[in-house]
Length: 330
Ligand code: ACO
Image 1 (cartoon, rainbow, N blue to C red):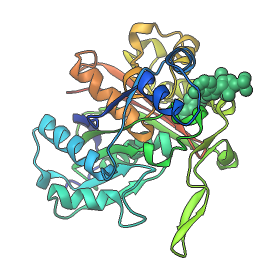
Image 2 (cartoon, helix red, strand yellow):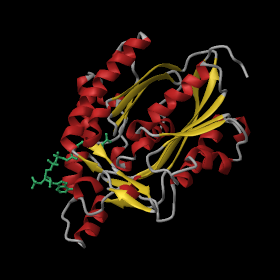
Image 3 (tube, rainbow, N blue to C red):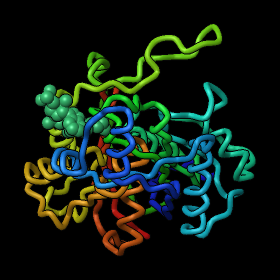
């Protein structure tokens, strides 16, 4: 292993969405059977979401992650045995323990190296990517799998129309490889643990039963205000750290929670709409999976290309947030 300080580059990406698509109309019809009223018009106007993918019962986060990881490995032209670090960002792990990363490591046939989960909710992928980059810079890893994967449908209260319409399931993965040339130029992570209550799933398993509230709860307006404030600040700070101006950013890939947050952010940063990647309409909010899903979609669609400067941003429960600025090389 090369122990000299070095950089990391995104060598490949992949994603996987469970096949079952639930449109707003499907969801509204299902909720109506329990006398809960919503509509495609309300959901689209307030969130921009048109559909979400929902995993069937029994399908786990590691099931989604393994598919995304295989696609990222193929894209990078690497084999499982090349990987020496697996980091899975998730708030919906398969088990209390072992980590989903360990389950994934075994399923991919990766032998050796470190494997662990990162829990930073919707900021999870940005946290995981920054952690993997730090391993590379310290010479502790040559090829890492960094994955955001969630089955958020499991922690939604399907009788709460204020939250259940917002989320979906999915997984996105990148292979991060050590490099002499910088791919990831700068990264910043933040948390404010005093704001746990505005977005939480405050339950646990103890003494053989669920203790507390197992469902996601959210103060939507408080989250909205926090999200736009910290994302703008973080975008400016990470560009400053890298010594680039905001207008040099080719693509902005923020956490996909709500199209109104995305448009508001792009306006505040003075970035034109064609630099903003939006997948929340198709995927809804997939928490830690949303940024790598959006990055992979942008690469598949030819919008994200080698040479471009991409700003990825996470924000979510904790409260947590962060940004990674990367020059794409693949
Ligand atoms: N369908 C129809 N009506 C609804 C629905 C629904 N699905 N959900 C709520 N309403 C109703 C409410 O009951 C309320 O009715 P009332 O006026 O009769 O009391 C009315 O709509 C307005 O409710 P608000 O909660 O004030 O609606 P708001 O305009 O704030 O929109 C939303 C809610 C979309 C959640 C908004 O607050 C938001 O975008 N917040 C950002 C948070 C977010 O995106 N979170 C995602 C997870 S967090 C993250 O990823 C960082």
